[in-house]
Image 1: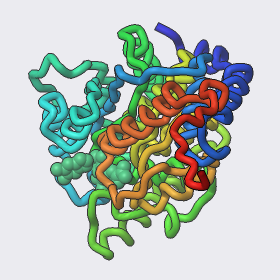
Image 2 (image 1 turned 180 degrees about the vertical axis):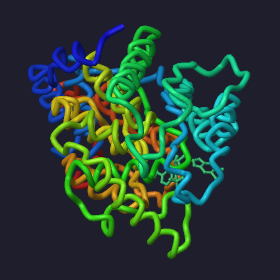
Image 3 (image 1 turned 180 degrees about the horizontal axis):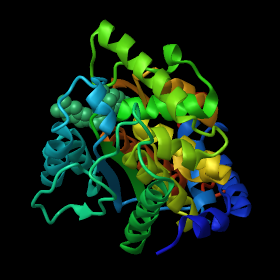
Length: 356
Ligand SMILES: O=C(O)c1ccc[n+]([C@@H]2O[C@H](COP(=O)([O-])O)[C@@H](O)[C@H]2O)c1
Ligand SMILES: Cc1cc2nc[nH]c2cc1C
């Protein structure tokens, strides 16, 4: 198992030679230059990741980090906290949103307990519990620095496992009632953004409850003093175990040179945390849908990326990755299967000359 330190030091960026070769091949396909838009950039990006111009993404999976959030005590979430456990278990049965969409995309799921607050009986879950939910960060740090690092290393381990099992494309997902609060808090701590712009209704809140959520998060940031220049400190103080775990997945994917997809707003924030720890991570990341949560756009602006789908979705779980898998696979099909101008000899035998 790799340590966080080894991974951070071992990440190398995109393979420039493969990128150039792939761009040349793409530009030689029988179409006007650039006419397949983002499908082209995605297929070329894939080459930079794997070092090969042509790539297969038949075997794919999503890694779902499930964890509870102590901040729920403050009344910042509209859903009961039990939903974290219930949906975590439902994910192993494939009956929730991400389960159905993943099956439809031909993708497997790895459900990881990185901090569910209760015990349960389910051997389909990868039990990597760091602790029984984070502590309430309105009263003190969510977790220790050591716990945040351990959670990141769980993400690295899960990606290493997926790669060793032959998965060619990896999605990220999460389940954790209250995690839009930790997402906004981490982003505000790292960028100085205001609660007004960075806090949204998450799974659903009244207008009054949204005002309260903004106050709770602003107060928690004053109390904890996270160091904006130290992403691990920020995640430990006002983040979540799922965020740390997914940040580890993005770092691990870069280290093991595997393509990885951002899901909703919590996953996007985790990618941003990983990119702040090592900017080369961005060479390995694909986006999926745009989340309705307001901080999503701010995170993507910081990442310098764009979502590929606009579907009015805000469920998270890994639902967007399941949709993006179809598009990324289509991008690879273009690169792999279209003929080039060099391949085709101009064949005039079809022409009927009406002037004769
Ligand atoms: O990813 C998103 O776009 C997204 C936006 C809002 C809510 N969620 C999901 O809802 C839960 C968090 O919402 P909340 O209101 O409890 O903080 C968590 O389990 C997420 O999977 C996800
Ligand atoms: C049922 C349910 C499923 C979810 N998945 C992510 N957040 C959720 C919130 C609820 C309430």
